[in-house]
Image (cartoon, helix red, strand yellow):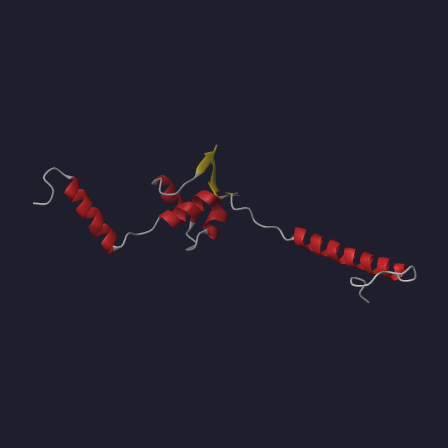
Length: 120
């Protein structure tokens, strides 16, 4: 029974209250279930094992240690513990793009033209 378009009578009041309570319970249940689904924060700390699982190619720990030694990957060190910030790793993954042949050619031309005398 819908009470939205008509005026309530005194006799319909208990039914209307019951329906409202039922709808409030449904809304409350929906809110509680939506709060239990947690959204993973984009900026969280990863340890070495989590980093290896997070990276697309699933490198071995030794490979990551090599990158750290070459300062090729962003990392933080607290005492002896290595930590990686997820947002920095995401940025690192996005910026580690190989240049196309056209980009390399344009860069080379710009470099040559910027030198004294330009292209000979």
